[in-house]
Image (cartoon, helix red, strand yellow):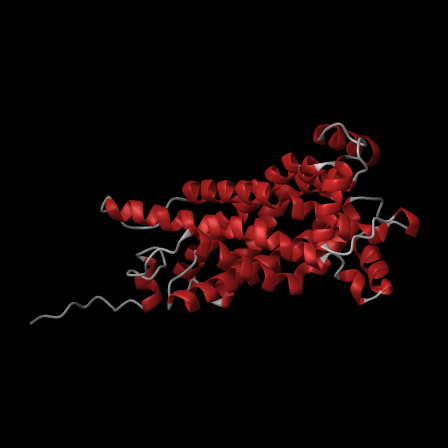
Length: 318
């Protein structure tokens, strides 16, 4: 019997033909996907939260730059770099679980729908972009109170006069005080730019990462979920995402840190900021945001892959 001369594909390349997923794995529920996304996000904040604090402090006031802000925080002590860490955890439970969980869930749903139609292969880049925008928008709306707490707690240390600081004890205290002192709907201050930021950030990060890791794997022979593949695909995705989402991020931070009535809308905040500091103010904090987002994307998506594989016995998250 003649044998085929075609070389046997490595296991990861055979999985690539089925969109890099275990062929017989049962799709996880939205709750399971969300839980895995939150776990990956919380794990990652231990490494990346200081960059968030630096970014926020640069965005909400006059800053000499990344080095000056970092030096000032370092002089205040280790705790200053982790100001608002409880808000970061709350953010991952709300926004992180929604963003990563819904995206992975939508990928599963798309895969099941294509299988029912007898189709094979991965979804298009446009489809992945749409999934990223959808998951990011929903997650941002759910997680806006935690985002507001993260901004306020991270920016509190920049206020020189101790009497003017809000001094929230933790993220829950911040959320409760804002609701009590400013009204429940104040928890969604800056929701517009927050959602636009999350839609552009998630759309670019998740879609470019999913697409890039497949392209890199095919050209280099590296496994799709391997560390080198995840690093370079996430690095490219992080740069693209930051270029697109930074203006929304700056406006969001300023609106959420502002005193009640300081800005009538996000658009007024943007106009006032540009008039005072020039158009480049909309990209203030780009360096710490990129330095944070690149490892955050690499670590969170890698841990999401690892946690999902551990939970399911081998299935891929993305």
